[in-house]
Length: 409
Image 1: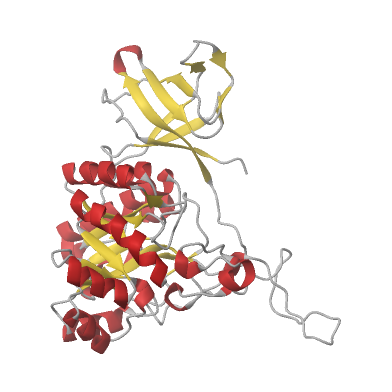
Image 2: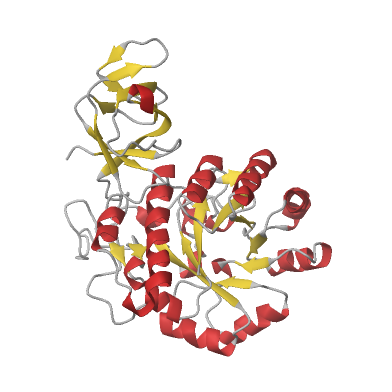
């Protein structure tokens, strides 16, 4: 099974590759469903493709908005450059875009977006006849239904999301944001009104109706986050070719931590087969990234011990992403850090190194500003600083390793 990780920008693409992704998916300029904050211009796309290919990783281009007629000229001007740069596949949702690609770029591999709402084998057969190589299935399907589809259409590659935020709308096709803010989710501009606080009141009555709520209000549209790391064998048995992590809008830390754990899980399953067991430490690690309470979504219909809706709007944040490793100077027992968030003398930092399966811990004994040599009590975003660090293993910490710090409760 292929592990696909989100690439919201060039840094996140490289992070996903370093932490074990088999493929990354990135946005096609203003023509993907995470535009404009998480899309690539052609210069960054060129660098990203080169980096990924040099590390044996594929790059899939998400060009999956529902376009209007006046989008096509610019969309395909961008796409032509992307093809020349060497994308490995394109992800589309619109039949007109698909037809144009088949006509003008017959050699390009086409993946069908989850936005196309594919829920049955007859639809899969139809898309197969249209030249689609892989379908990213609707999130409403159970593993049993996925297995049935694969048995009926064995030549089609199937892909599904296994981790990250869920959308309350059918396969993400939502009109709330367009209606409330005039920013269409189907054009990559969703403002996520499903996460907002709502109260229910009948016209003509003063009192609010008694829907379930806590002291913060009612989040009746706010879904939990998907987490399927405990169910890798079942995912494999269903016939999936690709396991996809959601999160092009998330941080590089999120991409690193989640990709790393699913890489561990898939590799262990491939090595151990029926003897495979999920490591409880993986779940603990996934609890350290920003997340809402986890669910298995619709994959396991009998697994309904918890409601699908989270009783809070904002994610749980136990740890802060505080920086990346710029250099580890072994001879000086010094770690140089590009700071992304505040950390202080006396705090314990945790380092996620793509070359190391274990988390590395270091207490901040002192902080030195690398630009002027001055001692600091705390580092802040954009600071280049160093801290003393003697790695007892004698190994050099990799450049670009991710650093986090436990958040104050």
